[in-house]
Image (tube, rainbow, N blue to C red; front, top):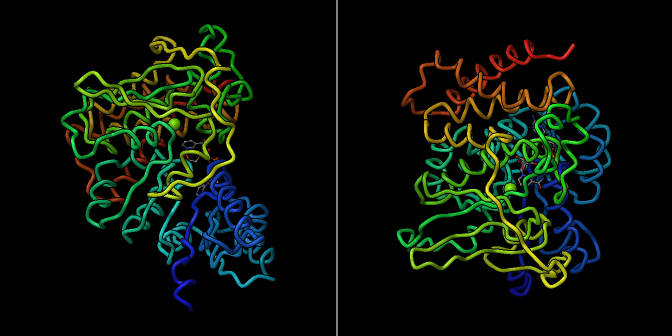
Length: 409
Ligand code: NAD
Ligand code: MG
């Protein structure tokens, strides 16, 4: 290899959750960068080492044909034979199950996008962390269900953790990590979701279709429902606590319906530094992909003059109790955030399957936290992944029981 070629060695990347919204946005950036350099999606500045999906094998196989990864993995073991058939013409390893996802995460890539939805992403993401890679976190549930454990592993392995979540990415860009004592507060902005102005009566009748119709962002179903209940912001408060050296009380939330100011940091001298941009996840993802450089992204340029005004308001906790419930779970610590996350995953799934109503989601999460007092979680420290998964499983069965009681006939 010539020294010229060595200089432009491609960045080797793995994408966990490649068929999802974040996965697709990440691959869109890689596709554009590679095609601009070589005219193909699979060669250029980025080399796709591995891709994973939950069960959508046809989409995963199509991506394998386009990006030619070394390995692909599907979470659903039963789907492995059909995936093997679909890529039999390619020189591509096929793996399956949790161990398959872990293998894909631990492979030779330098950069890993963690974009599986829910606690299912925890073990593969931890595998990437343990290799000391650059791990880009979209999967906030990892930090909610196992934040202390996860961050201990990041430090132990010397991994680089970059946030893809737009609010945390914004804060990361303006946070003075050398002077955390100069920071007074960090403020996460929230769009308020599709029901920002809805009455409780309207929210009670809300359908899954209405709940996933986010006004500003196009995202997967689970996070869209979390945005509609504002649990997403609650999960993000917990995520921010683990990502940044701030106290719990220093994390604030403000509704900002235009989703242009992605979050901000207020310093003790009265300065507030914010990151602004059009609501397009390719901007924060590109920041992590090119980091520490920046890359060109074909996003709609921000037109502040055209927008005219940006507005802010305090969230209404009486209509969005899950935000408060999540903040209390963070204060309580121990197992509470793990239970919060598991119960929410169950309740959102039951709502999407039309088994419970929209307002029942908060009811299930709140009752699961109350009922799990019997888990004796005061002050407990989760030492390892097995303990996290055990608490997660117990909270899921409790939440499933609770949803069965609420289930609409
Ligand atoms: P999505 O539903 O569109 O995609 C989820 C991906 O995970 C898919 O590839 C799916 O196949 C895979 N998956 C689902 N269940 C799985 C399982 N049990 N095991 C392995 N893989 C599984 O979700 P998304 O909107 O891309 O969100 C992904 C993560 O990123 C979530 O944690 C979400 O909170 C976070 N996030 C998303 C956005 C966004 O704009 N979409 C923004 C910020 C953060
Ligand atoms: Mg976000």
